[in-house]
Image (tube, rainbow, N blue to C red; front, side, top):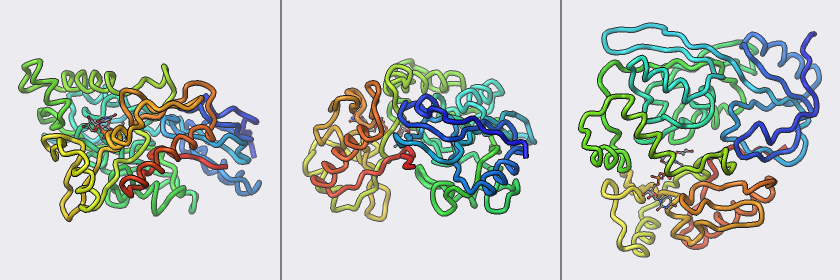
Length: 350
Ligand code: EPU
């Protein structure tokens, strides 16, 4: 067998949070064809694997992973088919997400423009059903090509089989760790795009007096809104939104509203969104601010002073340091409102 992974590789630099110890073995995969041999090697050596994509949603353990970290770097961009109003594209899992968004906009295709500026690679996008400014990848996904580690073959999952939910999919839930995404197939629209129906975007175009922006204008708007809001991981390492926006009961929502009588419900404001069925989605960033924790600093980690949903590594932080901050936030949310805040990035324990 010719598979020869690298040995004793530092993991922190492979992620945007810059946290983590080492991998005993590490390899970069550039084609799905390499996977069967790697999995045969893993099996014969009885070792575990961990799939790494862009590293923008991964927080590694401080110790040593005894198996193989497999970085997916499978490239490729193809136009598969088109009709009068749609075009289907196939994109390799290792293509940079935002570069592909830019490319689809150059091709005058809409459907993922509001997802401009999201860090990471295309293969990771369906795992947590990335979403922003009213679009989610589930809305344009036709199918996802995968290597099935159970059977050792490359196959494909339909949109329904992906079981997409808010920041969730079968890849994180019922079939966690079974599939390795090798490519995604998206169906995009040739019809004119419209302003994302989201407060920040609506006020951006109102200010500029643009009623029917084109795709490049929408992309520019989203990139500008994100730049002003989210800390650049190159400046201070982070993983974007750290907690999922929790869905709570009417009873909890009423308590939050009683404590904050000036808050208006969505669409007038985006802090508390009624979902129907006596359920409410709460903006976790605002909740953390309301708990008085925005800007809280520990020695090596902090809550961003401008957007409380973003936790940051001030330099040299360990996963242990971060977990201490996470626990403080979670304890506070439980104590005041009985809300269990769930981290959105993958916190890997070896
Ligand atoms: N807010 C505060 N204080 C804060 C942070 C937020 O009051 O410190 C308020 C905002 O003013 C707003 C509300 O909370 O009224 C919601 O905040 P924001 O508009 O920034 O959106 P979000 O709920 O924090 C979500 C996604 C982001 C996505 C944006 C835009 C989640 C967990 N986060 O953030 O996705 O970009 O909406 O659509 O769903 C990601 O998943 O990593 C991510 C960045």
